[in-house]
Length: 167
Image (cartoon, rainbow, N blue to C red; front, top):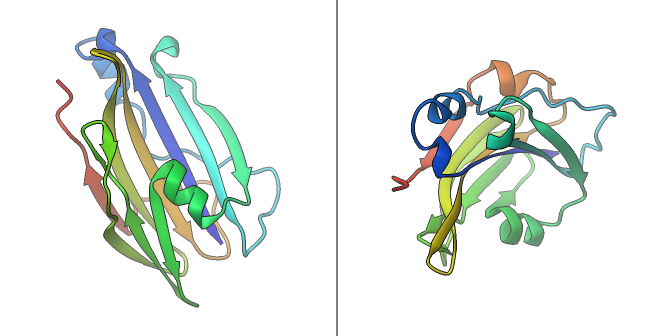
């Protein structure tokens, strides 16, 4: 099973400085999974957690989606996987400016029962104007059984950060 918790923190210029930035920077990079049902061991699941400036970054909104194909994972959330029986290679298609990388970067390997974290940020631009900023955190678990508190309470086995200065 591959389980991805995709945390998206979204803000505007208003929260680039204090006090908004203080609230924004306090958002954790991992949340409890809040799973209501057992997961299929062969599945690919994404739990999206959105945190917005409008709630002062205090209210996470959850959405669980299952059955994603490898192409959807690559195209929609910029992750690519190569899996053999006991190991998962994780590749990340990062962001350069306004466009996605044209090639993936191998960021780490996960053994059964491990999880890794990829962190990236970006600014959303429409025409000449910056509309908002986003931080994306991908907590990626590979294995058969995921403890619902794992992302919230344990550090990842591996991490990769692709954060830019957002002026």
